[in-house]
Amino acid sequence: MTAKPIIDIQVVVINFNNLRSCVTGLRSLRYAYKGECNIAGREYFKKPGYHIHMMQINNAEYTRKKLFVQYLRDNEDAHIEYVNLKRQLANKWAGHREGQYKYTSDKTDFIMGILRKAGWQQ
Image (cartoon, rainbow, N blue to C red):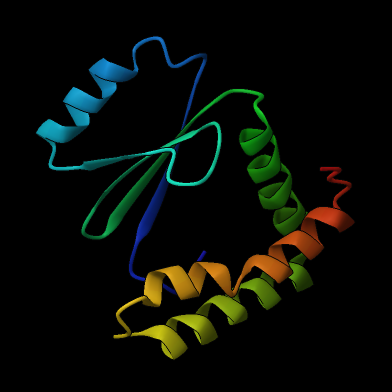
């Protein structure tokens, strides 16, 4: 996807049994560990320009993300609309103190609409 100057990396694990080792390893690479950060089933790490979203395979967050991405891959119009929304929001919130939060928050309605079209049931 395009828009913000951040690379999102999704890491899928069987379980979080070795989470402590992952935290130690990623901290050595200068990632800050943020815990779940308001999304159950996801462990979040960040450093300037990079976000790592670690989740267990087949949990609700993993399934939701997988469904969303697949829908965008299968529906070019939805993909283009999402890219345009991301660009618009990146420009709107650039330089604002809470810009990253607002950018993410303002995508929620679009994302939920896509998930409903894709068959997501909460």
